[in-house]
Amino acid sequence: MIDKEYGEYILVCDICGEEVTGFDTFDRALDYKDKEGWKSRRGEQLDLKDGFVDICPACIERGN
Image (tube, rainbow, N blue to C red; front, top):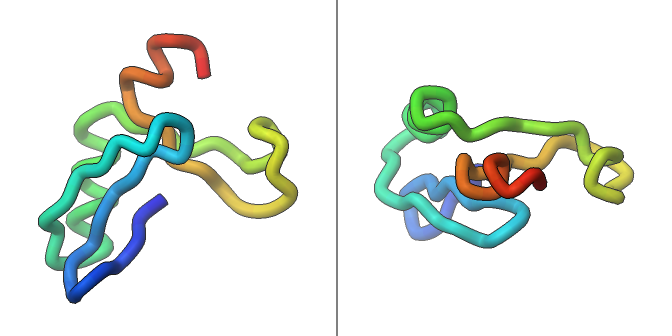
């Protein structure tokens, strides 16, 4: 997920909790996510009812 805390955006892996901080806009966090190989998946695939989850490259490699 991309969340906002204390005026900055944080990218968090919804599987392992890895955080990447320091983004001043949502779009910069989104650009980083795409550039670094993070993936978004629909929530139903991970037993969630709604929305999308963000998954870091390490969790993708482990098959999550």
